[in-house]
Image 1 (cartoon, rainbow, N blue to C red):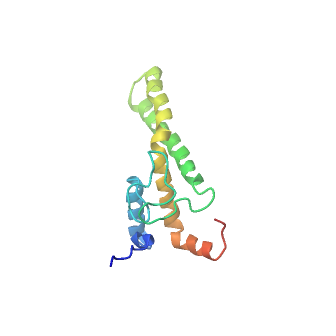
Image 2: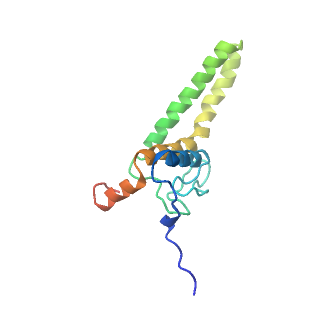
Image 3: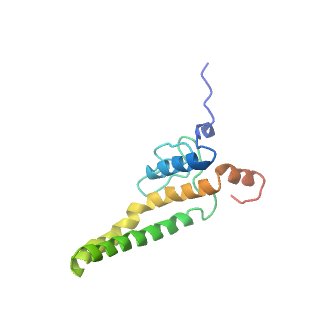
Length: 147
C-alpha cells in the first residue's frame, strides 16, 4: 500500500516571526523562490508568476490588486537606481552628456524589465513580514475579505 501524499501546505517552513522570518524571506525573494517553502519554479517565464507555488500550493495573489505594491516598488527602484548612478557619474567622472545619454537611455529601457520579477518577490516579503499568511487565510475563512 502506498503512502498518502502529504498536504502541500505541510511544505511551508517559513519561520513564524522575527529576524529569522525576514532573513528567510529576503533570501527567497532574491533567488526568486516561493516565500513560503523556498521552492524554485514559481515563474512560468522570466516575467510571469504562476498563480500558485508548484510545491506548497501557496496562492501568490492574496487579494485583488495585491501586486500594485510590487509595481510601486518597481517604479521607485527604477527611478532611484539611475538617479544615484547619474549623480555618481556627474560628480566622479568627466563623461560628456552624449556618453551619459548612451549609458542611461538603454538603462531606463532595460532596468524595469530586469527588476520586475524581483520587485514582485520583494513585495511578497514586505507583505508576509507585516501580515503573515495565516492572518489573511483566517480572515478569508471567517468571511471578512472577498476572494
